Length: 446
Image 1 (cartoon, rainbow, N blue to C red):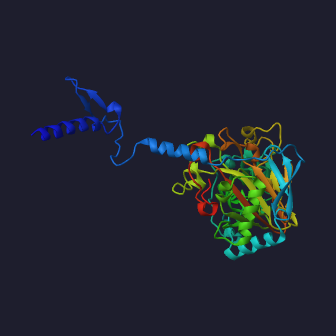
Image 2 (cartoon, one colour):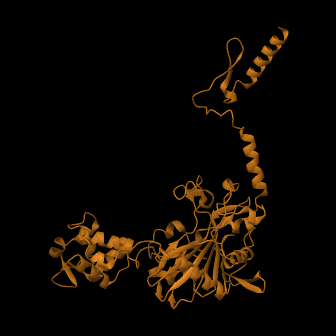
Image 3 (tube, one colour):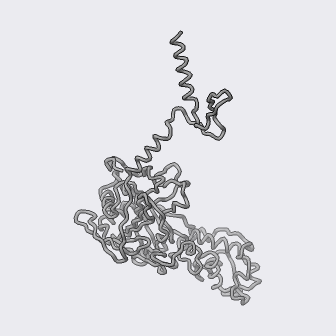
């Protein structure tokens, strides 16, 4: 009986201590002074089998302590050169070409053998288009909307900017530029009229009566489609494929990654956790209008980095590309430069730049040589720049909006190039590992 009483007292004591499985605020005193635990409707229940938050908190803290910090080369000044041995017997010069973004050109970074190998490997795996464009034969037989446009395209005064009572071919071209930032010429306009079966008594002037019967709805649809689909006018026109660089790749690709380690001065964790190599082929009209390779933390604070979060790609993750390195794999006959429209521009303001008040400097097909920095493609040459600063914790910091860049039109020949992106996280997600990392190859080093 005495033993039974002791067991009962122990049970009551244990029950009192384990009563609250929710939160401290879930317990209160009843009228007799006894503690009663309840689960308020706005409290989240914790599974009995789960550990409390402290072990996870300490695990994150421990990972952050051991996680390697980022490194950036000091550009010093434009024209400054720094020698780096990237492979045995291969000494390269890291030449500063801009302070903002911190950008460098490295001639002869890739050997001829490495360039040719990457091209051959890309051909072997096959190139896919970066986007689709409409076949010209299909476009000529497409049925377009017919009638008067409800937008400004249906307003004669909007076309006739000099108020002379007729619309000239130049005004047609100017309208496309003014309303759609579409830089067509008179030949393109004539082709459009032919496809839409629009005729005027005077080939170079459309009267008001002719305009009122004209298929302006079809014109609006045609020009918008031209901008989105035609290789000459859309934002990007190229072919691409992706090549592995890790332990399961060939020795040339693995050696290239080791050269990148020396070039960047980064801890192995970041370089080995980088994305596969994107190989691109640009043929005539090939280009990529000005864009950013990464995304600002302040605009996507709750999005994990894409290279760290497979489950939410590509809808709820952000690009966290600390460094971009591009490789030119062949010599281009004409065009194909890499342009930085805002590099080292003391008056650059991105919000104002986006308004395109004077020139659409995003359009590198039209305004390549108006960019502040233009780098010519040359076989074996690499261009490296930082898309972000480093924050006070040593991880990914604010995005550098001066890193706006793109590829200019191929005017003659073909351009082969490759993008090597090195990702890194902001502090909030620095405890997460890259999806591409192979810890065995790093010997477990973070």
